Image 1 (spheres, helix red, strand yellow):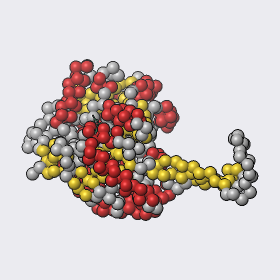
Image 2: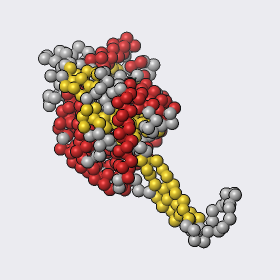
Image 3: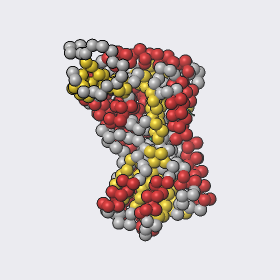
Image 4: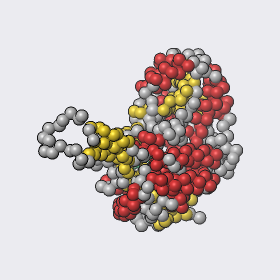
Length: 498
Ligand code: NAD
């Protein structure tokens, strides 16, 4: 049966009224499982008006009470983690264990938001001048929109939604149209946790909904996570209208393997970070830079592991790697593998012909491994976002760092080595937002922040942690003097404070 998915407005599921919908498919079987409503400009406006009204009372609610809602949310998300994970697997394709891990990563930020009363506290300075005091406070921005990608349908809405709501904003989520069911359940959990009606709403949709949010005068802040092309568009459209915008975008993450690295550890790291979630992670490793004489030994270890990957439906606990999200995306990834061969890279493991009995209509492909990839190739320059790992051979550490720094993207990177000096020089010198030392996917914990550099980000950096508190609040500074002892008479010029 094909389910109908509408929107989540004022703490209720409502049907869409635009007459426009999109298909949601199960990537493992290819079957259409739901039709999701696409919001019209009018539906967006109505949701924004409700959010605007609700936000005034929510902002006036003491942070201690707001954070109690986040505590409730934490325990509800924990209770419903299996349901959230299953919904993600059925629409995204990732394995259930990976989906549960995603819920855990989202929860870390919900936990951080449970301390919002502390994180939002202000600063006070006594005696900034004689008998004059000054203090700074952080106040919510208003109605915040979050536009999120298909690959983390719970983690990223938790990152944005928990931070924005705890800070006293009303949040409108526009999730990916490819896997909307888990975000809809998350919205129900916000409501059950005690978020007042209008504080966490979901508008499903496509470009029409995104454009309506970007153009809306009552939405002063936009958080976006997705591809670079769309992120750049969102950033320009939003900032042209004087909104604050953070747009976290695409990636091509390099892992540098030094000749002294523990190759078993490096191989494990590359298999997990390159092929986990079928490579559909913004922090996936898609380039292995083999330094010095390490390449042949590395390829010898990697090739049998890539060939032996257990590919299957995400719902099967035995699967290590599920299907790609859509048939169109799978074909695009396969097209890149064809191109790599044409460009002259050596295809060591070819996963293009993988067929799974009983899942012939699923979007499966096997893991692919390229050797001898060079920086002029398109398969090196572009984000492929699939289970394709490219090995680039590099003569020296300096050349490897040069590759990392010259690449257009700057989300994450890692170095595998036993040499502390090399690791320190790497961490210090790379032009990348998130760096791992013997850690392949260095996603920062909730009390640091997340974000890349270069073409991996436009605008404001922080999505969670204290950077997130800054993004979702406005700073106000008050300077006060009480009448006692004030000199009389107008002051026409600035004076040195004393
Ligand atoms: P996407 O850019 O296609 O979609 C992201 C969001 O934008 C979705 O909600 C989508 O509906 C909307 N959108 C799509 N086309 C649009 C258009 N023409 N106008 C306005 N809105 C539009 O990205 P995706 O395929 O869902 O996600 C994968 C991408 O996200 C990859 O590039 C990946 O690297 C990136 N990503 C980045 C991070 C990060 O933190 N840097 C995290 C996760 C994913």
